[in-house]
Image (tube, rainbow, N blue to C red; front, side):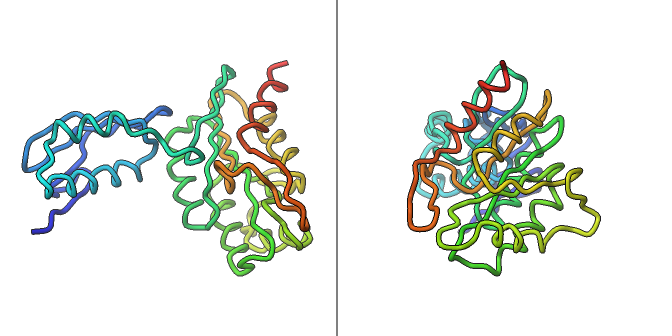
Length: 239
């Protein structure tokens, strides 16, 4: 027999009273086998759905609700997926490896849940790869974010300016350069600019690399880690 899962629906497995925070999620899990309060370090509403599916799968294999509750408490977020860069400046900085328009849309929707202030997104598109998706990436971000900074993400043999030009094809006609978005080819400068712009309660989402620690320029691969760059930019911002 297959079970249905959902949020606040009349599904077999459902999550109610969902609370999403910067450090995880909690919800009341209602199942045909009982009700439990779930706490997890995983971020975002999409992970509540993922957890519900996991519960349904576990129950079919006769794994107890207690065991499920324990496992969920222990799951650690995957590095580079919505990884939070700790700081004491009242801004949220998240690094996520979303690099398709769908994944980016999902990451932005999840980020919006935690953002009391503005949502600033830093992103780019890889060179020598699917050029057709660049415009869609531009649309996905510029329609959703309060401010977008378009930058380089492994340009490889292509001209970074050309890649950014392709992304800008997706800019909505209402968006204004300077007010709504800007292009900064150098990824380090782009991240620094985003963190410099962010005010209290704003959220900076740095998308595309996640846990990767390199940038491919031409045929050279250089060391580059969004998380390190973000930490150093936060240090500069505090001085």
